[in-house]
Image (cartoon, rainbow, N blue to C red; front, side):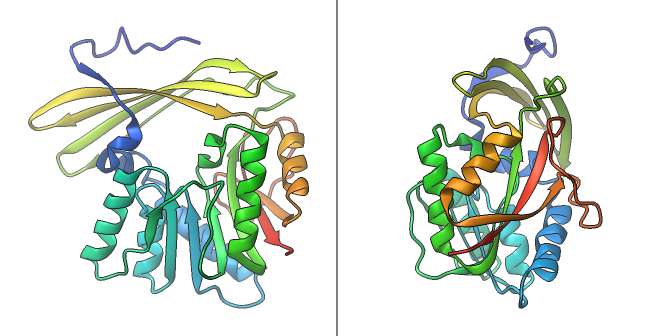
Length: 271
């Protein structure tokens, strides 16, 4: 489908920039589910681990909203991201609150950690930025070396359904003080043979000093349910022990089939 961005709010100044280079805005836009995600992460630890979790690790941590929330609860946290601006934002927030600035710039398909963690999490589809099967498999293997045996990796993936039409657009709003952002995301292209999906995304940013639009394109690798299952098995590091929707309801696990889109895979480390 095509965007309605040219017909809506045409008076806005348009800035064609990466949304990831604006950590303050990104943090607000994607922060709405933070409390539910934290309850889910800690709940999975209670349900599926043999002892209470103490250490948490997030690949593609971005601005570190979840890392910060866990640090405030007294847990040991660490994370990585490719975007230096996001890492600077994350570490500055941790430091302001008196915590160790424990996130760093690295490629999530090629990294090592100095210790093993109880739970890893990547809940909002960042995994799909890995553009090849090789990179995705290497990521799962890096995570397998970063999480203790019996520990968990909570992997959120937006699947391409094989039995129903996929969702094509999504819009939502967020506000913090005098800052408000309206977000719109739409499908620009799907290439199932090459397993590439292109999405337009825009932040309409409104501040007392003025408004503008950040316009970006996301290029993500696509996965059907069978493709992600095959990848997990091929890594040799993980077994799927449960699956949930992005509603994060631990009392309502789902069975993944060709109609599912948003799925969190609860993986157990078998290395």
